[in-house]
Length: 265
Image (tube, rainbow, N blue to C red; front, side, top):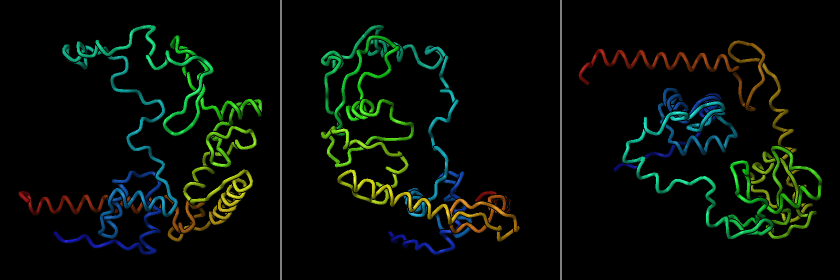
């Protein structure tokens, strides 16, 4: 079996890739890239390139979209399950007021360490449907008690010294989740509050630098002014979408012509 030749990214590949990723799924990106350069990108290649060139599609893949309902919501089980399947499910159904055995072993105020190494505190008994949360991370409880408020939306509380058993209030720092993602992505290391502040300063500097590179510019194709979504973007979104639509239409016409020439092929 012949070994697949390694694909080497050139500047034109990167520029076109960054143009087509926003708003398109991985399969769509692979199709458009193949139409343009004759190279089919694998799922892992698309994923790695998106991370390497800092572009996002903005799509959610197979996830439910806000407001989307499950196909069987409100539909009686008898309409989409066989009588045999319904009978098999009866033995494993939770009955009203039933409490899991592992929940009975702990009292309110007891602590446990979860699989990720975080200490959790039991804050309520699972006695009714109104109780939505039984366990809460201890470091969140300590931070909220110290600051007198809830952790702000979009923030996470981290251990400045990386020790998940050190609940000293000075060791618990609330930072933006987006900043935490960048710290992990860039491989920045911190071991105390001071080094954590340095990491956050680096993230902010990178953000300011990138924003300055995204200044409005004239489209190289139509001349209209637009705000780019990545530093090397030279064409506006309308021109990019128009070309993609034309290429897809041309590819469909070529495919139809081939089918007419070889109806049995």
